[in-house]
Image 1 (cartoon, helix red, strand yellow):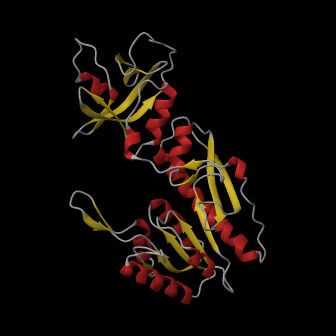
Image 2 (cartoon, rainbow, N blue to C red):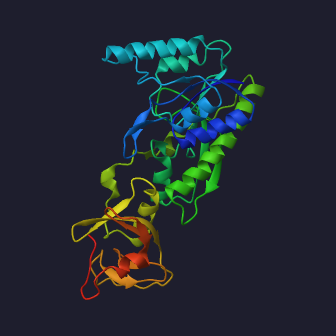
Image 3 (cartoon, rainbow, N blue to C red):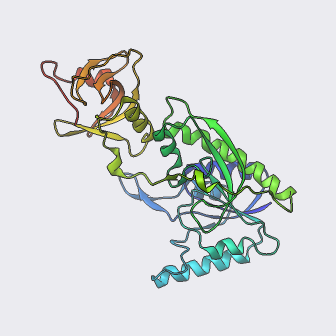
Length: 328
């Protein structure tokens, strides 16, 4: 099929690679403008743009597609981009983690004569976890499974009917990074299946989402990174894994920031309920034990401000042993 692809990060690049490998013709790519990144704040191309350029696919990078913008330059750019897309010879539009809101005008032009619409790869089993951070919220909530849904796009936030979906189990040591990578691969497989369905079936069977099962995956805020040691060990463990690799869970020791990257529920059912939450209890089997609201949690990988990631044992060796230490 002839496809317009819209996406920006690595998750989207994985899907684009699968679409190209399946033999579809990507006539154009929409991706976010280059952004400054790294210590030198040099402009960096998105993973999707790099892949598109490597495959000689035309790339469009509008600042906005918003047709009600008060910024005249952005408004003209949006109009120009939509007009350019409408002139292209394509059959379907695929969107994944693009990062810009698609106006209704774009959804409408994707359904004009000879076109089959606009389909989104979403990293959850809709209608659970609509929104910006479905991977992180699934881990944080303690979900045992998640998946990918291929959804026909509507003006609402992830509200469209689902064409196909597929579930995977969430491991009890899953981080947002590891789950991201597995879902990205699944998303690539599933969009290829979806495109075959679209090509082979003039009339698609779409499944409306159940409004009674909707949950929202709100964007991760930096303020959420701070750990509350009065929570249960399981809640803190899930929080740490959901924030790895970004922005990373954090706590403080004597006013100094400490990042917590990996944790583990100890095998022993030891409790120290008379100890203040956040108190460092000593070494565990693999890391350092810290009291939570209900029981200890083992911290396996930490990072002091300005330092490198180190094991919990290494971190504990640098602490004074003659006084009680407590994270706050």
